[in-house]
Length: 189
Image (cartoon, rainbow, N blue to C red; front, side):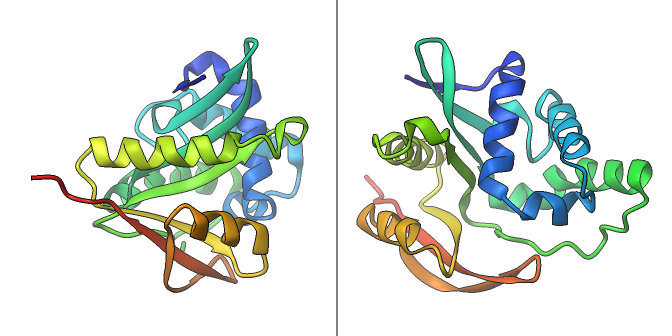
């Protein structure tokens, strides 16, 4: 079952977010220690009005366990949503995060991170979460749904293309190159 995340989902969802981010979690936080990275993301997951807040996350729950998550938001709000995160990193860890790249933009609903627990992969959960993210964006009035995919991630690229995403351009983000893919939702009059 897919549902909105709740603050008490913190333990299960934060591990999924960090799994999806991979090395980007270290780059974004400027922290090497995994325990500290977990602490930072747990803090923000339970807060409102930030990029990693539970309010921007859908979860896939099965038998009372969260085994998948999707973090998404209006791309036009990225700067506002990221600001508390970057201020916290700078204040507590001395990281100058003023020159962060923007992975999304105004005019798109951005699927930030999609993650499925390793024991549940290959069962279509990721596809269901992506479909839910597309529908969430449409419900909020967005006609364009965007995401980034690593250029060497052939499996993800194949899945997104199968679901109707197309490569719009290439985007440089956190010292790496990504395909910026978009899904154009149909307008109904």
